[in-house]
Length: 69
Image 1 (cartoon, one colour):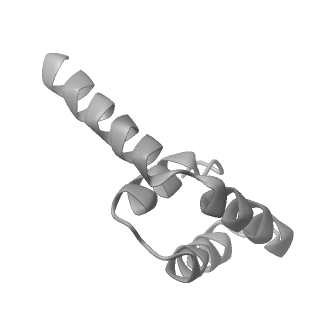
Image 2 (cartoon, helix red, strand yellow):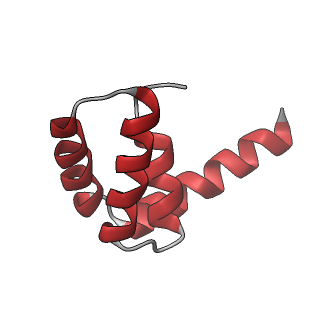
């Protein structure tokens, strides 16, 4: 597993997952990867700033990219 949560954040935001639920996902992930708790707060803050439209565009791009490849 990677320590970067960008992919998880984009998927969750494009699915309109609430920030509280995303924080719960981060807690589970941190426990599994033995990450520091402060990283959860930082990543949760970034998630709230992620625009839903941007996440949806990113998902469309990735779907198109995988179809072409």
